[in-house]
Image 1: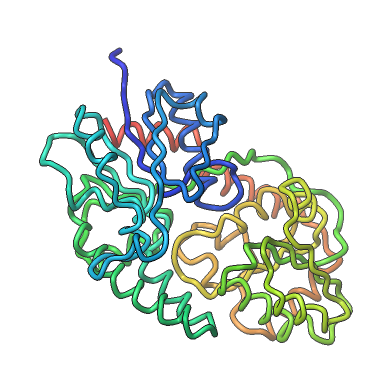
Image 2: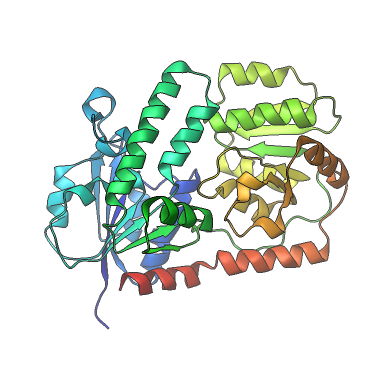
Length: 375
């Protein structure tokens, strides 16, 4: 059987594996390597940081500096794309005709400059990016950030429309994102490929936990908003302990959490501590105000935690609706937190959850599907 070679263009250096998009890229690369694919990884770095850990999966790795500030800006392109435009990358891609997998709209600027060829091009969506930035605009109170998020959203929508029919195939992480791309851009060549997580389908922890947990990147405006909503609407006046864990909480968020006697903040936990918190929690409470992409923290909670309580926006199009407690109103949220606070997962719930997770996130199966789609 002839060797299969693949260029992967990643919007970020996919290591360390410390947030959703990196999980997907890193574990996809590991799966493709395991399947015998020869990988040439191109990735953008903001601090000239190289990661030898990735060498064991790749034939070659090329690092490109991301241009920050005014040097990375463009009047016509979104900043996340313009700051990653690199002619050295384009020249390297012209040296052969291997297929190209582009990880993230951020890294798709090459599609505007590629030479026509018979090579296969796959674009991996991590979000409907213009929706994501519009929702960041709605979540933040900072005037400067609101201006940035608004214009970035407008430029992203124009860019996504412009390149939507260029790839041979677009792979989204949820059916909701597929629906949006079809409706807004008339895209037909789009399919769902579940995220690669590296999680195993182990049994969730037994017995009961002793607190509720929200976890996420606390520097993201949407996650700050979710924490404030949970404190004000769900846990204010409650005697149920509530733990908030994540990286880079702002001083304002720290001060706000400190006002609640039953709330505790754990800033910048290690991966090990975070996984321990997820396993020890009785309920992972994970509402979202962003209806795009898929929330890796929910997948993590379902693999490694007990009850998972969400709103519909958090799981729209994910396939996880049946194994989460999906609520619509604050009243429903409070009621279900109280009801589940001392209730272990039963055997039927565990069995249904394992079945859904195995079906969606079987990485050998999903890798075989990806290889078939590329070749």
